[in-house]
Length: 511
Ligand code: URA
Image (cartoon, rainbow, N blue to C red; front, side):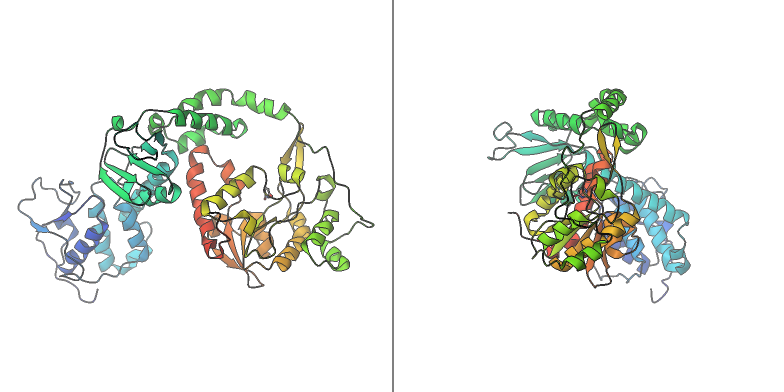
């Protein structure tokens, strides 16, 4: 601030329009700071109900001047706050704790008077507010992951007279997050008509507009239905006993959510059978390929991919595929059924690069057709991108695995193996000339960038290669398949958000 305001000891009550009135809070702060009102002199109220405040100890506020936040500019000063404080405010106002506005104002006041404070991450006010923000984020993740819709057929419910079914869910968030999270559900279920009922606030989407209403009771939401039965069957089927980590699961899916989660009833029985089922999986039917593609016209075993490319004078993807098939620059090729080269049109503007073919890809000779591929296809469909318009390939062209019982279990390729395959990948890039590359996971990112990439840190960001091409970093779909069931939906949404970064290179729409 330009001039130091004179301090005011006069107590004030600030009435915000609602529990999450961030705009009103900002305007009130500018007024209060302009008038030099000390944090301990302010009581914060939201909506009609007074929220007792940590810093206003008196039971009645009738003797206090009421501050109604005025429009921008009137009697306000311009505040300079660190960006991190603005971000913190946006989350903390959603917290249920009635002291949140008082704490935020106190930190803001202190930031105005002590500029060194912005560099002190251990300041107790800042720590308390950061904890609140984390709690809000966790609650938002839980809501994304644990909302379960029940389908109401048209005509069954007077509330739902239209020709389309309505999907209704009941959820009990810990904080005031319904309005903030609604756009997520709009993006995720744009084509559906849905309503989420909560004790404090309800939200409804009619396919084109969001509507917010007062809270509802548990009985206003429909009971379990056939859709739920289908979900339970799906849950039973995707439950992988070999990946069960019970303690982690309970941490991610705290018991307070269980009563509204139909699948919670399955966790006990499925966990009890986990050991037995894992043993059966290991002893189960083999997936080892029964057919090995012969090396076509391979008079010599080439020692390096680059030599093969140069020597054979390749001009097109078909030739490149044939040469890749013959590559034995590393030991993986000896054991795989066949090399799996990329596929897609030469005109593709974006190239997705995975790690290496999996069991199914090895058998079919095509990239991303197994479980990871199915998730990848779902993501493209959700983004409205046509798979036929993108180029999909891998950093390593042969399937590396180890035999466990009769099953072929994926093994991560070593750096040397990925390096041996690099020329095949670079050759594909030269032929396709994509405007942008998307690295799915660490192996792809390393191969494309020529150096290790911290995928979790850089996910959703563009890095620039030496050749000037942009590389979007994100997770490999198998990381999402491995995620705890309770985290999967949120992880998937975050992945879509990463991929959306490539929207400007968006290939032909599917619809
Ligand atoms: N994982 C990959 O990285 N690529 C595939 O083609 C399949 C699974």
